[in-house]
Length: 556
Image (cartoon, rainbow, N blue to C red; front, side, top):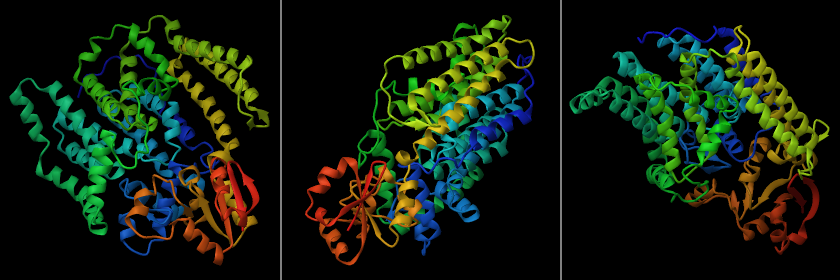
């Protein structure tokens, strides 16, 4: 093991780490409804799995009654497990990312202890779980936090295997890598291979040494562990759906990276797309970066451990920057190693002048003051009501709260006692309730929970049909507890499921007219689609019954 530097950090109580972690991931977890788009999609799939009549439906996930092969099934299986135990509640939807985030905290503590850097590891764990981007991702049902847990475990175990010839760590690394593959696909293999390849290059003293180190990875027992976990689902999926091999390996991985996937339903951006977003993702700890830049820590970065940390977060960042498909939530993958490296460097730096530790807080105070000055001016904001206040008033009070928290954190950090960096937890701690209140107040526009209650209570027994849309109101099937038929679907997520097999979910105008003859229908139309709807010859058969957010409910 590496020799421990003399600790510059105060001893952070372990209980504080876990209480903070539980607060950031669990506080009012079910207070806001299932979100439309991604969370709505990924909560409906496990609900349908529990109703499956065939093993194939557990192998090939189904969304709104149609095959959905875009992602591997581990997230759905785990969510279905929690549904079976606790029921299909809003807070249950988010248990997989919650436990994944808590698992990352545990990994950071475990890894730093193995490296004899316990105090730095506890600071890193606090920085990780309280970073605003990580907090939000740990409370939203998506694949990335689950992938982050397994990939982080694979890389940490891989480092221990390489550095200390720990064969058990090798086995653990391959098992975790296999689960990472089942969490989000072959991107896990690519990222793991890139990071460990770069680290091997750093560690090798000659070309012969490099190839010797590479060969150690291909030990048959470790490979067997990986194959036994990763391969069965892929084989079963190819048996269940003949087109799976092309669709999953080519369309969803290679063509997505090249920006040629069909349908093209993802964002693009410049090479620097993630740089400002990473700074926001790491808030408030990103404001410690100036301290790292002005201090002389060149010798610190020359160690193999720090070079590994660099590879573990910088190579994934470069990979996603080069890729044609970009998304903000990809950034969560780089956070464990980014914060561990920051914490380790801060641990090794000498802060002889107490005021230096107050710099990050004062920077946040200055920025908050500028935002308050901007809000106090003649600025136009949406007419939202949050906690009984207009949005502008709520934003002013909220920004003032952040300013005061940053000021208190700065002053506390200058004390000689053990507060130091820990005082900065106050800033994200007050930000979380502000963000939650915003989400709760916007429930009608970010979820269909209210809309579903209207349909169930006011219009029972009617068939629910959506006009064109799906992703914009994707939580609807989850709350209605049944798939929703769609007229002339424009959904990217239902594109292949509709194309592969004949179905009664996606219907055209002729099919809808046939349905009208035999059923009482509640037709849902988004505000943007109203002009097109009124041009239809069947529009005259419907009357506006109710409005919910951007959705108009028409009954025949």
